[in-house]
Amino acid sequence: MSEEYGEQIKSYRINLGLTQNQVAKELDVTPGYISNVENGRTAMSLRMLIYYAKLMGVTLDTLVGNLEPDYKTNALDNALLSAISDLNNNEKEKLLKTIQLWKDNAK
Image (cartoon, rainbow, N blue to C red):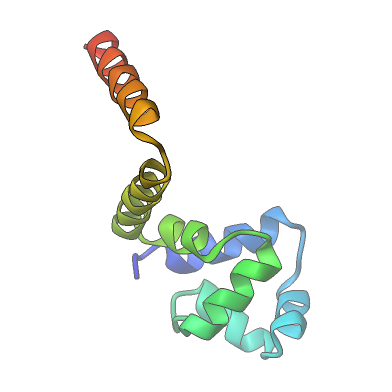
């Protein structure tokens, strides 16, 4: 995980106005565990990350993507590919033209 992992976990908690004690109670862990995560002394398990994401009201992809920029890039690519695969050929052609127009205007 990135060096800002604990800081970002803490930021989610603070943005929701929660204390370490409240988060610890909801996750059935000790406040010391939350403190250790926020201070970079320990990392959350996948199970705990899932519970934390639910508590914060975000998806696991959003949480992990914010913690690991490389993951966010891959998750975004996968989400785009999934959305595109649901389109019919006519919609795909329109999307491709839209993307090309957007790229041309961005130059």
